[in-house]
Length: 402
Image 1 (cartoon, rainbow, N blue to C red):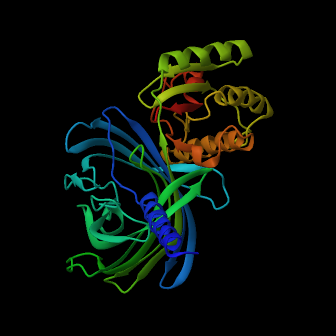
Image 2: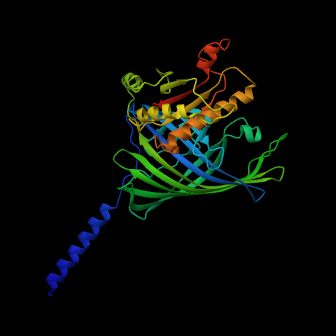
Image 3: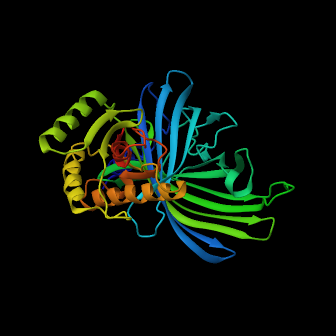
């Protein structure tokens, strides 16, 4: 090979290397459009330890509904509803409604959040944030972030509790998720926080923790599509107790199509009539479209469905399968009989029974179903007649809007 040929080969290698390097550089940033809606669904599997001894295992479903109310400025305005639900009985397939928080906040294209001090959600803030330039595979950057915790029930601390940290990022290249290739970066941060003492009550004396995440990013839409996380949090209390949380979380970000409520309600009403489902009606409400099943029958003093009701739910399930992208809320209601605590528990148990049955028939996966018990708090009719009590003794299934 002569010198001219060698030079040509070297030049070609250099150009190819430069092209290859350019191909693995990405520009990470958020993109916004007014009116866009999406939801984030995460499942957390968590072990809880008290004084270094295993206490219990929790499985938590977090569901976030987000709407971009103004995406035209430098800082996009977000309106969000955060709900947390937990599997109360280990091995159960349903998640029982826990807490609900609303929040409004701004976020710029690099990911920095502006938010009022009164909001508890989102918990993790300024993660992820981006450096505002092209990032090459293997390149790292760092930024300040913080967590917000709701310690009202745990420690009587009324205001949102802030824990600062420094997050470290690294672009890992492209990886596959659900058959598609996405750029992926890692996020890691460590927490060591010793807050000032609080007189008159138990308070967190020392907080230590770690979070390690992988985030799959869609550069076209300017949004994460999924992430997974391993975490550990240790809280040493002023009374000497040590509480520790260890676990993993997986999340998916889903675009939400606008729900044509009236059209869908008409379709469901027509199907209920066609299938001959008795004691069922449909209404449109703020949460979505609700199918009301009046006087649903269980075995006496139990939450065990009668066989006749299973046949009814089979038909309802076929209707719900026509809308597979909509999560559902199953809520239980009772008539005004017995104690408030007993009514609440009965309504929860019966909502869980219906939800479990729908999940067993593959109408939805467990992460698409939330249950909630209301007891006798939401009557449809007076409880002073047998007919009214039958109307109030019901289960409702709501196709959720977002």
